[in-house]
Image (cartoon, rainbow, N blue to C red; front, side):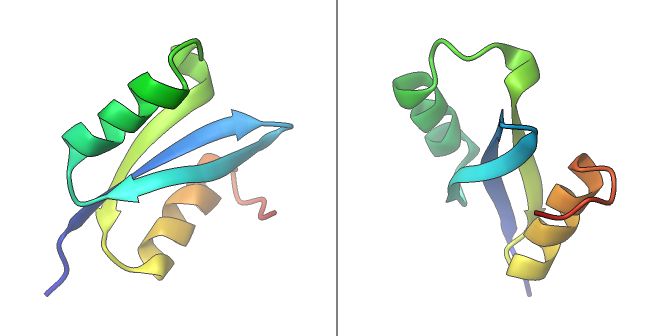
Length: 69
């Protein structure tokens, strides 16, 4: 059975890019605060998905509006 997985994605150069992931939302938030502290809220998302690559890819595809990098 899959567990909830949290992924930090940052919007750069017109695309959403995966920067960090963890089973702990607090750990993802800590990474955001440590490395992306000056980033406006509109430029990042913390995605909650199943813990498999296909689920993360589907969430990214949705953010991209169907486009895929």
